[in-house]
Length: 112
Length: 110
Image (tube, one colour):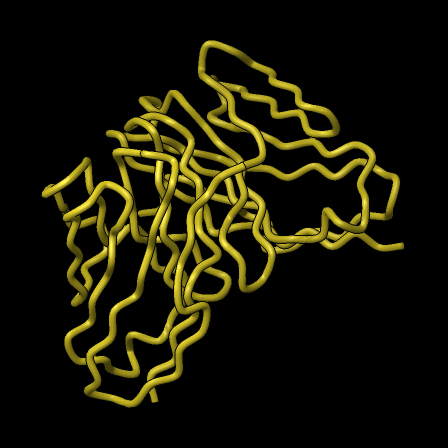
């Protein structure tokens, strides 16, 4: 059973606000990921991390930023939310680069 | 250009029958494939995987078949149950990242 948590589960916020989506895992996994998914579409990787102090951008350009100060924690921040950021954000982790990724429940973000 | 394709957006199957979900890929360098299941408002859940050195992997009601020459894999669910109704994603590992298909919505009819 994977133990990966995301908060909040749902967020409705106005344009221009700064938001941070939280992701934590208790499995000690080195690799963590953030995906963005719109309804009926594939998941797009927006950020990933190989370990503490390591962050990389994924294949989908995103205005968000991430940090990895602790192994278990990988928060995603939007400095100024816009309606185009409305989407579902999914966090995942894996033990190694080629290992199965385990997902959190996701955060559904609506920017008005 | 989509490297992993799930050409059926949805599939409807009678309860108790076999569900067959298909996935095609374009990159012959892909050597590890995974299937995930996703309910609305939840994260994907890992189902089953297959390495390119195999052509079949089975886990309970779920079997994945890989045809490397056709660059095609399929997920078989037998027998289909109402709880199997969800979106199923096929994914391939490439350069230590997952490349995802767009998903197929499976509906199990009672």
